[in-house]
Image (cartoon, rainbow, N blue to C red; front, top):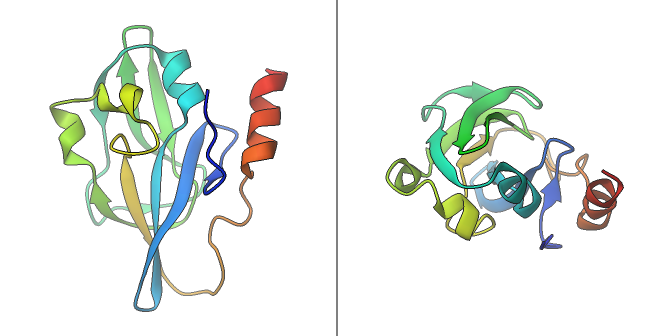
Length: 134
């Protein structure tokens, strides 16, 4: 299992990566961790929010269905959905094969404020410790 150091993590097994700054806003890319996709098994369907939807930290923003179960996906940050990974509609298994790359789920634009909107989330070491303890 991999846990890249360049992003932050939730205790619900989502990752958040500051993707780019867009003028006065920050765009955060969100996906499922390697641990989550492994625990879910073969992912067969991904339901994502619509572009323009408001999201709040800890609130559900979609679902991932696997051969084992259906799991909610939670937003790690507050903002507005500015992009969804439409490719997952046809190839949801991409989340299994490349959870930190092509398997990303959504991008959220975080307006206002300064600093890193993911700062309050777990770093890679803390997330790995959480996974190891479970």
